Image (tube, rainbow, N blue to C red; front, side):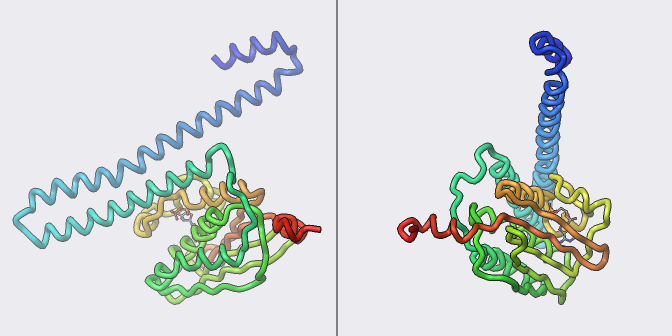
Length: 270
Ligand code: ADP
């Protein structure tokens, strides 16, 4: 069918247009394939916890006479439903950031606020995991964008850093200014990621170790969400890692210049 489309358009535009159209078409096919993969992945990922909950409920009915067993099954059902709810939340978040109009409510954002909120969101998780989160670096920097989304992005990186670290280790969150960008780096002393896996961590549903990721309740969507948020802000996210030594994820967002800050204040503008 796509061959036919190329033929028809070739007739109209002549041979010069063909390359471009063929390229557009293959891109359209790729987008469609990605969408189909995504739906297949989502279905698979949702079916697993739903199946587990169904099975646990059935088993619980059979064990109704044994209160200890009932409690055990109820606990596991709770774990599975929490996981399911986390996954659904991340799927919604991802479709939101993948949506057409990027950053509808963009405004000047104070990076200090983003850092404080993202760290606060992970405070209990860090305490429970006995990982110390340390914040440092430049203060008073601004970017233009969505505070909520940037907080989500940084929070995802911090939460990963904690998830893949051992107790009594540190996670460092640092801010710096670098050639027109604000760089937010999250460094851990955790398990690290091998070179071949590092290239894939930003893919949707990619998890290095499914078993460990299941334990941590990971969905494999966190970094895909971070990548989208970075791109929507005209920035990028990168990863550096050494297996067994730790990882550093860096979010780079264009810095909002002083002049912009004054213009936005309106009445202060000359
Ligand atoms: P998940 O919800 O599974 O953490 P992510 O998209 O956030 O999904 O991350 C994808 C995978 O990348 C994780 O499953 C994990 O294997 C790996 N990963 C992410 N962050 C780190 C980190 N700081 N240290 C080690 N591995 C990591």
